[in-house]
Length: 104
Image 1 (tube, rainbow, N blue to C red):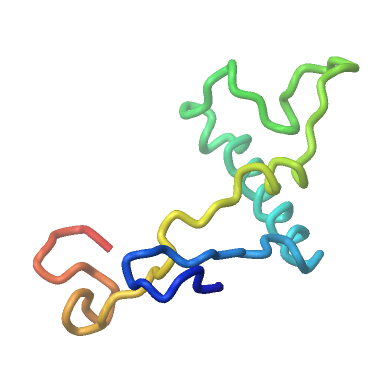
Image 2: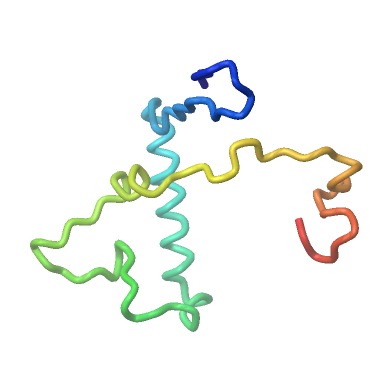
């Protein structure tokens, strides 16, 4: 993170360095493989759409390129930069939002 100006109203410049370490990309790919296995399982068969392809049910087209590595690179984003809240005031010890039902 780098401050662009000294004004508190200006956003800083943030570089997340996604996948700078090769292990991060490997872990993303392994996570995606696990998700694909779950989606392709018998238990999830009633939740699948026939027109949505995963690596194991994609069309066998010579021109169809599919790379989990590229998918991770293209889609991983952080939308909530901070991600924290005060325990005991916002969330309880089980990470439930205080005052809300079934919300974590």
